[in-house]
Length: 273
Image (cartoon, rainbow, N blue to C red; front, top):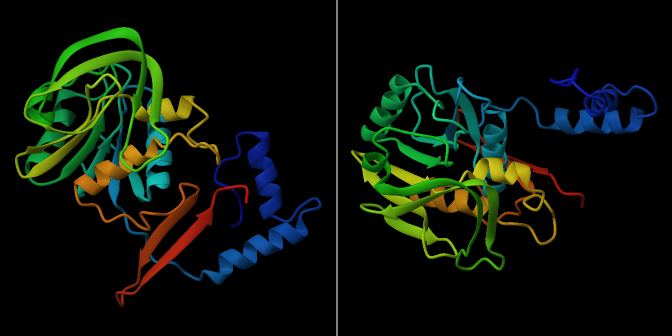
């Protein structure tokens, strides 16, 4: 690693100093280089899903949240603009938008056609985002949407601590055609799945990606808010074979497939231990 990709703040510059063995960090820099060199030339990593990014609103928080949830859930993702020609992927993730202009109607119809043709979609929704033919796609009907503060708890079987979500805005839905996988503490559908043509749609009734960015308890190493488990359940429902499904949420795992068919896995410890 010759230099760090982003040099926008003091922390990035300090990290670059470590990697370049400047100042008093020669031992750390040399150790990092040896570990990276020992990996050799890795083939391209296996991608489980493509996260779609809006070009019409500030999509940084929800895209970052989708990345964090995916890493914790054991999914390897890449990003693509929802406005451009969509890649040939089996699974797409559409994080909750902030406005009614998350994407153009053309982009939305293109995504729906992908799902209708056999792709799967994991999508979430905030109270401000609007999508045409929402009920036809998700199998859920929006009963009401308001600016009331979101505060809900979701119990996942086998998980000690409930998922806790908070934020601005609340959407109340009913599962018309969809199957309810999880309910919130008020007994309302929270995670649902439905067929759409040849594909499947898993719907999360909360802007979960932005919520995990705004809260700090999703990344504590003790008493962790298990929001990532929602992504894990969604992935399991549509048949994504996750890497190390029982792994710690603080270990990032990627899988590289060699031309000979062998699989190489790389794990990165994100904890303080």
